[in-house]
Length: 287
Image (tube, rainbow, N blue to C red; front, side, top):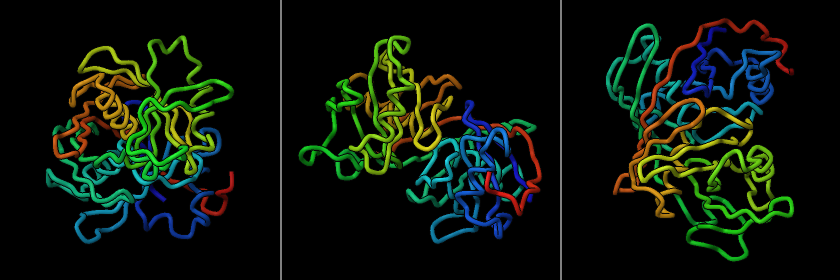
């Protein structure tokens, strides 16, 4: 069973075509095994490409390292898009991918051999009300801004939103002064987030520039996150820390986010082919 592995600013994804994974047993078990860095390929997630649906050229399903399926991943779907070009399955500059979060438009902006691609993608429109995130609050809120959450006997003020997935943003002045990994793990599974949440720790350095550390739902610490970058940029904007166009600097690199006036969020970033391989353990996917 053939696959390609990609990395997008250190956020790594394995990409399979849908027909290759038939008969692998429970998908959650298979995805956990593939993502295992000791028993499998090693990845933050898996993207599975399927045939076209109405209004889209291909479908993409995204799975996290814990085997759970996500609605969307900016880096994961960009890896899927690059797969289609690299394998010669698509050649037009515009590509529409159907995800659980809707149909997304990807525009190829740059390509370099052997396997470098840069895309501008429509990620979606953020939702801010507590029910849509979803987040349990004392009363329904139209926006969750600077909201106090008790985390391990500590009050943390958060801005939460739905950006394809639940996201919770915490603004900090200094990453080194905050045990953000511990807090990220605690917030991810906090009782106020019934579907768990991605957690972004955000430091604002200028009106057009933010730095972000990511604790991703079902994965843990990642070097970057596409939807996380979008959520952090929107959260910074609605708190009047930044403008609607920002550079988002993560440990893995820098992405560009624009929150358009019509509400759509654009994400521009690169992705690279790392290697191709063949999965052999078809009858042993427990891990």
